[in-house]
Amino acid sequence: MKILVVDDEYSKAQDICGVLNSAGIINLEVRHETTAVAARRVLQVDNYDMLIIDLHLPLTLGDKPDKNGGIELFDMICLDKKIILPADILFITGREELLKEANIEVIKRGGVLCEYRPNADEWKQIMIGRVKYVYQRIRYRKPIDVAIVTALRNPELEAVLKLPYEWHSKHFEYDPLTYHFGKIPRLDGNISVVAASQNRKGMPSSAALASKMVFMFRPKYLVMLGICAGVPGKCNLGDVIVADPSWDWGCGKQGMDDNGSPVFQAAPYQMQLDNRISQLATELANDLSILGAIKKGWQEATPQGTLKVHVGPMASGASVIADDITARLIDKQHRELLAIEMEAYAVMAAAEYANDPKPTAIIIKSVCDFADPQKADTWQKYASYTSSAFADQLFRNPNFN
Image (tube, rainbow, N blue to C red; front, side, top):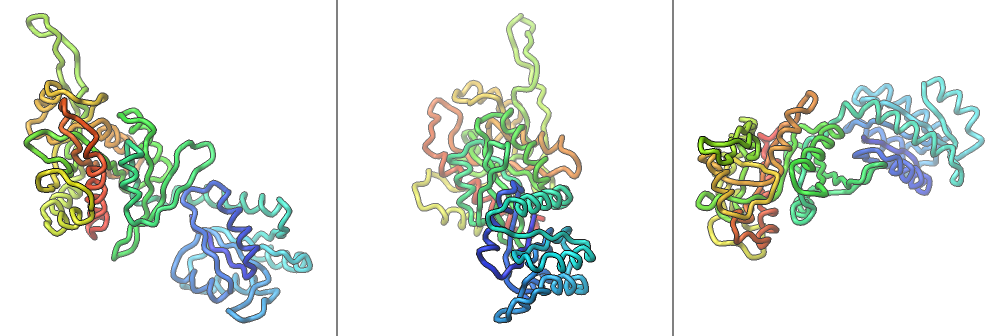
């Protein structure tokens, strides 16, 4: 939600911005201008959901404030064909002598006028009420472009938050999670992003968080980044795996074979990556300049081997794998299996069962171990970096839209 505050009194504008930021609105952006001309220019190039105008406003920088300045600004923007009118406009004044006369003019224009008094609560309640009302009107109209989910705060989300997206964090009432909002810079215009991490690893937590973020932000893309275990001989430590397809390796039936011995009969449902994204990821995987840029961005120790990006099968399960026997059994479910982890399938399912328009789910994880007895945390930080760095290359590509 975007709000433009037009007020030449900085202390009052600061109070207003403080009240707006306390309203608990998701992804709130507040901009402040001090003159009618500056506000009109801003409205000509960007759309705002709400406009808060001081009555006693100067026309331009250096002019004296006019008691009708706010009303005249409103009349100008109503006539300006370059401007899309905000959903709501609230007038405010700290001058008691203007209230009676101005209130009639405000009512004629379908607006609301509130009196600003620094130590009073009434104007704050009016403002918060109006903001929440507007938010309810627009919340199903303005989705976030990309929602990023990670299983761990450290090192997975930490790697995401190191991307140069102008991150800022928000907490919302009755919600225990922290959400991080940013802008992905692109030549064709920034795209919006929100990121959050689970409190626990595993498919139940990832399904809950992914579903929650889809409901709250209605993203076009639902992306999971982080770490996974690789299949030895098919990938190296640090290699990026773009899941296509993904499935739950534990889905099936515990039965008996002909000899009466327990046997697991796998029956996984494989979920495919969107074909357009799969093709784009494959193209980027073969671009040596992109791989070079990712390697150049890491200044610490790296594992042996050449960094590669793979687009291929990834299996999800409810438990951490640290033995060769289980890993080999999972490998039999798909002869081209590249990686094993604990969350991807749940995120894909959250997208599949979302209300229309459904987000496109993308899983990008990097190899930090090989799910064997030598499993360790040594390369988790590096793998988290390569996963986020490749995702950044994908997001910035003009064909990612």
